[in-house]
Length: 510
Ligand code: BG6
Image 1 (cartoon, rainbow, N blue to C red):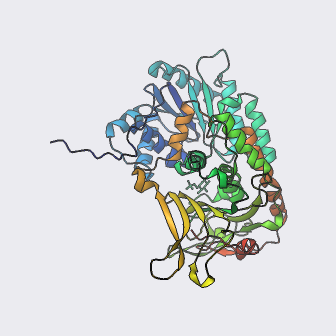
Image 2: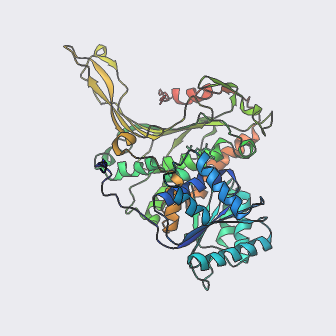
Image 3: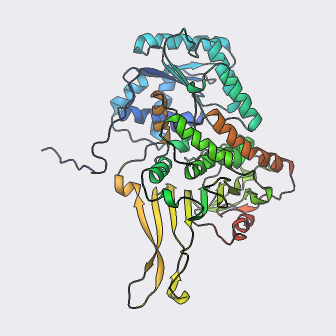
């Protein structure tokens, strides 16, 4: 007897948004951490969900020596170990593995790119991929330029007289300051058109981040109150309980501003702050996003707090301080925490502070945007009747426990008038009952379809760098800071508390 299949009515009739154009995807940095933890599992999940085109294959390229078979084993291993995947059908994995190829070589070696070109041409024959390629550059930013140049020299950047479309995905951080980001844009645009470049920020691939737009622009009730007349302040928290996870050398070059604030932090702020775009197509949407970032007032150094964690306890376990982590200098001045008070100088947001904090080794992993609304203009209740009132807060829970909460004041049941804050709650998991797709799946699929909406444009990354660049320079120059200044497992240095307390406000502890 066939089991009755329960259908979640919220998911009924969902369109399967499959990519249909044939394509080969080439991953540069194919033996790296991101490829193993995120990209290969994402490709498997797309295959499992039947979202990949029929004519499709994968080519890995990296310095490590590997055969095709070893790369196929790496795929199986990363699918098994990433924690991102539940293999439901071994045949799908076998088929995907069969379609994986590998080229090893140095990124500045012409002959390696000639070998790559040969493999791509053979695969075009084998899989009918018609010259369409996506090059996913998952290497340090310092290699982006040389890879693009090599692709160009090998005739692989999709010149007008060659068949097929060529798109390039580049990982963040895009550059390490304004000058290098500009140089990188110039370097890439010497060989590619802007519409071929997909600057990825995986936060834009998160369902809950996209839901910020739906909440704001598909509901009529929020937009009228989404401004300085009704909003008191905005708090954005990107807190991680994790430390460096073996990425000491990377983080020493990066720090919290380059790792989180310049990209993920700015994405969140721009989605909350942007004007309604006329349409959700790539140009309109990105125009509005860039405008908000450009409207942010230059950061006042007195309104920027930095921190670095010392030893402490996270989830009851002792953890080392930043300076004791592998591949970190014992006298490192790299910040692992920052708290900023920002202002968006435009008509909508004049005078509304945006507090943005981000850090590693916080007590818990939580990314949240809280819109704090102003108090009711007059309370006809006695002070003694108000037991506890937080005011109206709309909390967008990006992760974990994805959802939206609206805090309201309510009457406590009973014969007397007593008032308390209660929560109206929407939870993704409970409502849609779906497994959270990795943001990389959505973004790779969008790139296959040629949709740049959720990718950064050159002016967008440059605007974000323009904002943080002076801060980075000032912090680099000023060595007077005493680090560490917060214990792992706490919410950052006490100056972060002061930053908001002097405005008569407090951080929400999500
Ligand atoms: C990456 C950063 O971009 O984002 C990491 O390099 C960070 O340091 C990660 O841990 C956080 O991503 P998520 O999706 O876990 O919030």
